[in-house]
Length: 258
Image (cartoon, rainbow, N blue to C red; front, side, top):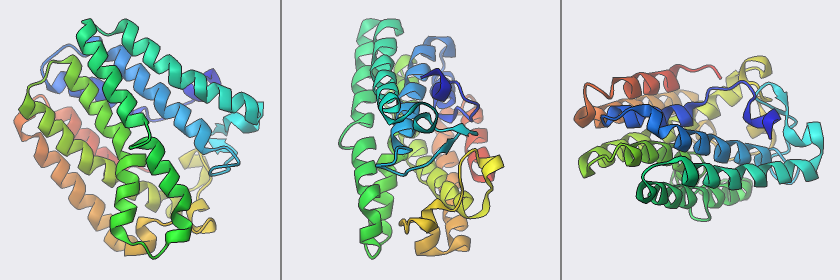
């Protein structure tokens, strides 16, 4: 669990929890438990994603992936333990209890069959559906990638007792940024190197995966990501000036190299 959870990485999702809380006008320290929980769920998903039965990758975050280091059985159990620990942490350490309950429900929904897990299932089947097109691809990644980004922002808003306009702004920002993040990820898989990325590049092509560059081409994919980031930043208007950190984060997503 420590090997995977504490490995060097971007920590974008927990940072989003804290930034969202701050953007909605509260002290981000109250959102730390939710931020930790999001990172635990995300890390569990990576551990399982790397397993031979899934994407079969032996490198993650610049380290041997969990199953490569400790074996498949321990990796499965480590992922299971992180998933359950996430809900323990957010339920126990978020106040008041009513807010903790809403956080637990939101996180469970984002990590479940209709979102993260369902998106992963469809992603595994995507090589058999190469003719499915852009609508199917976006549906996969709004769940597999986007759901955890959106819930990160939602948890920050819940802790901050955000109003409906603030929640709507965070949701719009998250939906667009999540898709942009995945498009950039697909592009980096083509252009990046293992040392910078912390994982093996080129696997999408090797496995025949349905990706944005495969459907749109690299240039059009980059333009699409840029437009989505601009839309995400525009959605933050109701959160200004406190939303400036979220805007900077969106700009980072389009410029990142790992």
